[in-house]
Image (cartoon, rainbow, N blue to C red; front, top):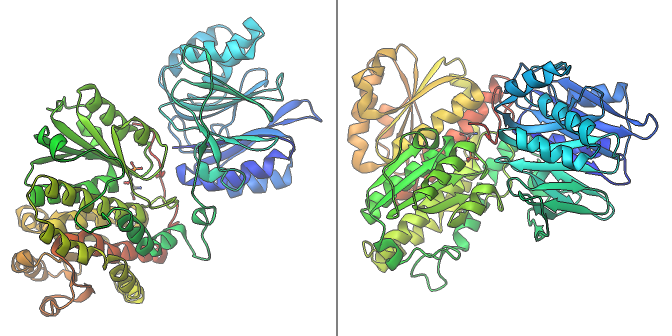
Amino acid sequence: MCGIVGYIGNKNAVPILLRGLERLEYRGYDSAGVAVYSEKEKEIIVCKTKGRVENLETKLYDNPIKGRIGIGHTRWATHGIPSDTNAHPHFSKSGKVAVVHNGIIENYMEIREILGSKGYDFVSETDTETVAQLTEYFYNQTGDLQQAVFKTLEKVDGSYALGIICSDFPDMIVTTKKNCPLIIGLGQGENFIASDITAILQYTRNTYILEDNEVAFVSKDSIKIYDDKKEEIKKDVYVVDWSIEAAEKSGYDHFMLKEIYEQPKVVADSLNRRFKPDGTGIQLDSIKLGREELSNINKVYVVACGTAYYAGLVGKALIEKLARIPVISDVASEFRYKDPLIDENTLVIVISQSGETADTLEAMRLAKKKNSRILAVVNVVGSTIAREADDVIYTLAGPEIAVASTKAYSAQVVAMFLLSLHIALETGKMTVDQFKEIKKEMEKLPSHINKILTKAPNVKRFMEKYIGSKNVFYIGRGLDYTVCREGSLKLKEIAYLHSEPYAAGELKHGPIALIEESTLVIAVATQEHLFAKTMSNVKEVKARGAKVLIIAMEGNREIENYADDYMYIPRTHPILTPLLANIPQQLFAYYMALGLGNDVDKPRNLAKSVTVE
Ligand code: AGP
């Protein structure tokens, strides 16, 4: 939620800030702005506008600004409508202090009132403006920017990543964070701040990852970092190994399409590293989750949000099926507030692409407090969830830029396959021979995905046929139902179509009333032991006029008797179908969004990284 970037060095900051903001737009795109200290004018000049970074670029083209220090912001609105006035950066009363902020200042009304009584007027509806005003208020009292920032941070409650510049200190960016991500990029004679590495990857891979409550004073040649006790600290340089190409579209029309097509590689990478060289089991990096540790676990919880949660449901089903351990699943925003029954004998698996999702992070912290063992499945290396978890399985999907998650879901599902197989082997519920049989099938998954991707033109034709749909139902049973939930979310998210995923057998208990002539029902029917049952539900909706598109495994010609349209996935082991059956759903959502003229990569109202609760 909201992206921030900052530059200090010898180059003109504006183009660097703009490129960075373009890469951070996935975090929010309601408005964009930059604040740059102009040596000529001897003041900070702000340019900001409602809408996308391209609008800001146009505005800057007409009103160019130049300077060697600046901060930029792309917004996902929380306080106040998307407008020029509410866009960041926000100024203090005198214009001396400019601030960009990701997060929420919870006590901003209180601070506004206090400052209001001292003659400070507020021009925006945002919580962020209080940080700019408060910093200036303390700066006027102390004459010391460092003290002013520390004092401001003592007064604000909430979550934040902040970039602050002050015209009296044109050689310094102040930055800090609490529950929102912030990194410092280290260059030669120049330094950067950013919400994430993609914003600055073209300039540096060397970073400091700021921890909560640390405050950094960043100049072009030096960086001073203080901990929460205001003591100066040294940090290790973290070198990022993502390539810049991975963060670019490489000829694809959209990041989402590129990321869909990257899935064979992502799955191959995820598998290659994780099978033991002798083929007898799984190696989960340095995670100690062997026989002994597992003997202390009597309950498993899977906690995540959105797509990551649906990947978690695959994990739940497979741990229960293969390892016969009961697994409870919950979305993080519910888990947090229900006083969950967990203790030191509970393994809590949290799943997150970004590793920064506020609800997932807080759910994890709650579980930690209750002494549960935390295993995080995370994509972004060095993210907060990855750093705070007891153990981490990295999903190796590389940067995922499109707001709609595709390759990260696939990588999470592969992690769930591996984890459930590992637990089943370690607890003696699966033999090495049984494992080897599944492993053989897993190794074919990348080429299976490639094969499905060659059928993309068929999916495009389905889109053309069903583009007029107003409601789309997804039905399936067992593992197929988890796939339906992800398919339906994707369609809502980018095609803005009303869609419901239903356990196929549950449809007749109410929602079937919504089925009418030509309603599109997508039936996922890869679980062949449940096939006959799902087909009886297909017949029920067809009898009420629905059009049915069935996704099933190759060789199951019976679907052709029931379907208006169908799509086969290559035959695989039944536990592996949640990965393959989802690929046509991703393509369907993509083409529907495209056909409806939507912004595929940046769907309305959404942001990739949800760092507010
Ligand atoms: C997926 O398409 C969504 N953008 C969303 O549901 C996402 O999966 C969810 O917000 C969780 O994000 P995370 O994996 O970064 O924690």
